Image (tube, rainbow, N blue to C red; front, top):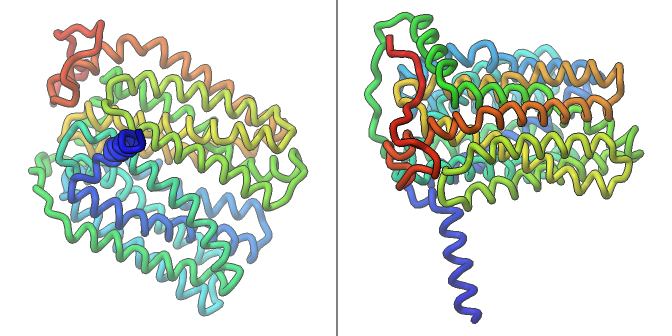
Length: 444
């Protein structure tokens, strides 16, 4: 009956959006969605401005590298500070600094005095801010959620939010650039930060007591590193994510070559390819959001990495636009699912006093490896061609998934009891012994 179908649909949407029942997360989600659209506008406008000023593909890569590399080098240290600081206040500060960075870009661009050196410096500044913002944001999610079992749903909704912005931001930026220039994209982005700042200030947060501030930073960094590397689940997840980020995720920098030289298209072809990837990522995020439990996400990590690799291999072999457009959503969706599922598992098993450090390692593996992967992909593509580079990267992703599958029984044995102990799932998965414990080194 129509009424029954309507009821099922409504119940389905309540399941997908259940994390929004938490007031603080609902505030964050709405403010961050607006802000991320502005962020994507700035990304597109920055790339277009660099190319318009220099006509240099090399400098495009350098600017991207400058904006991402601080996450790799500063991320672990930032994680130590995130564990010491109030995460809520830290996010307010990083968002205010990001807003000022966008306004600085807008002022220089609108005055017509901006140079490539200005863009490099401001991109580096944003990278420094992001090195603190990313682990703080990841670690703060658990404080916004009222029900711990909704944590996986919140992380999946975060991914959905990112990819909605990824679809809308570039489209809006294209219209704005064509109408009034890049400077107004930066200006809109600056004002968009007000939404997330206000949402943060409107939250009612119960602070988590911060401890260990009398210890040296290097001591806490070593402690966090021993904790992460001594845990089989955490270590395995981070290693697979770092591998995929290095050899697989930089596929986006090769897409202009595929659009032009391989598929014999133009800018519109590139737009179709990237749009298809973004749409797949959004659908993958919604699928994760609809899951009722975190149970089985370790298997999702493994399978998604393998599917991502297979999708890249398929795109590498494809010489037909329609076939590439069918394969790109598969690759984009699998890439997102692996990253989001990895994030969820880490967030649910990590000790609270080490959450910032572990999430900084997550940021380093996810985003910090990307600039090195971009340089590697560009270098390989210049020698063996873009299609072979993509095929090689996909094959390595599949090998990485096979390695993770080998460790999967041990990971499941260790993670299940933690879920039960923390009330994340009502019981333990079949085959998991109740006496198993997380194998981490003793506390110092």
